[in-house]
Image 1 (cartoon, helix red, strand yellow):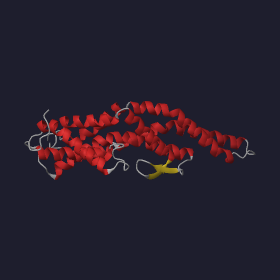
Image 2: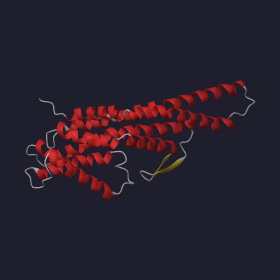
Image 3: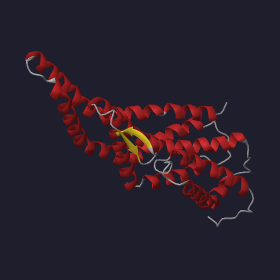
Image 4: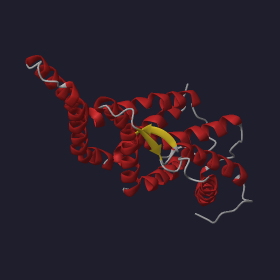
Amino acid sequence: MGAFDLFAEDSPATLVLVAARVTGLLLLAPALSATIVPRLVKIAILVLTTILLQPAVLPLVNNPQLTPTTIAGEVLVGLALGLGAALIVGAAETAGDLMAVQIGLSGTAILDPMDNSQLPSLGVFTRLFAVTLLLTLGLHYGMLEALAESFVAMPPGAERDLAGGLQALVASGSTLFILGIRFAAPVIAVVLLTNVALAILSRAAPQFNLLSVSFPIQISLGLFALAAALPAMGRTLAAWPTAYRAVVARIAEGFVLLPR
């Protein structure tokens, strides 16, 4: 791999296409896409990453053309790389929202420091828990590694099936809800059993006013179940490389232009 050369053959077109793919990644990548990150920092990451990747990508291209289709294709590939990680974090946030509804804390909204928006407290907690754990385990390095490998598997400017890739991006959204329900399942089960037990007890002993104590009991047991389920959630998130690569590979297959 040589040094950066702005005036090399195909260099300007390659820089634009590489920057388009990196932009797509930054639009969805956890933490990097947060509004709390200054725009100048995002631009600096974009420019620096593009310059560092250009010498390695340049030998892989063959007279790339700058057209709306090729630029849109590169952005979509970058979105796929960012979406693979965003789905994991989004699943944790979805689980928090589901648990908040079941426990009875859906009305307790707090400020999300990453996006400066009001969200349910448990959703913010599980999202920050997932982002912190994933960054500690090197998710940002994994995304950069996947970005570099994507240029070898899908060189910039090559023909792509944009419709198939876009369909794969939309279809991958089901992963968010599936993982979210798995994360929230222990808490939902505990709260459901608690409600059933309280309903049976209220029928067996109607003289007791269980309504006044059912809400604190439901919240307490729900939070206890959440604390007990966090290690299992952490172990699932710790296996992010397998899940991330599976999601990205499934989306990348949609961009492959099959021979007619």
